[in-house]
Length: 311
Image: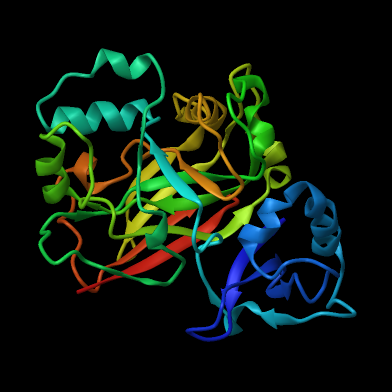
């Protein structure tokens, strides 16, 4: 099942829908009592997951309720305003290469536990949205990632149970102003203005059952055999594989929930896949992003997340 947040025109409230073939089925008008927004659905995920699955599997147009051609709606981030956003650092290849670009050895503590930083949950945008380049940056970068969305409240979640707390998966672009970030991290507190201006997510939320046949189950959580690709202006720059991730989403959830509750609508990012940003590739491979650039992130089963850079 693929879930979206959509609206017919700017300024309207985002509504939750199901992508069925090439149409968006409005959930609230098709299921009696269902709330109109995605966050409210996640708040009662265990109540609504089965009716949503049945609605997703129906053939043709619903007898009652609204549906629209996909090309007639504006898609937003599947969660236009997450409750929180934690972004992890879970691909070893990215960490090694990014540090080597700065003349640094691999940090041994990275292997002790998954680490994350909090970013701006109020700055999420969806597919085809413009991403405004920060006024003072010259080194704008994309980051090719996956995200999971939490669908059940929990604290101190054991790693062997953590995958059950995931409502679905999305493509994530954790945009980075590298020159701002470089100066900020010298203070020792982590990135701030280098990261908080935008995060893209979408184009839809894909439920775990859609990935069952590419799931690689393990004692410390699931991995998925998914190819991840990034293109700038139609030229492929990045190609990686989600199954290469060092820390699983289950391990990330266990770490994030230690002594701290997670709630439905929290978003957890995987961190950048190997080769998944210009920082890793080097400006000899491609310059930093500029206004007018079209950035596409594509992941098997999860779709294409496209954005355009603006001044």
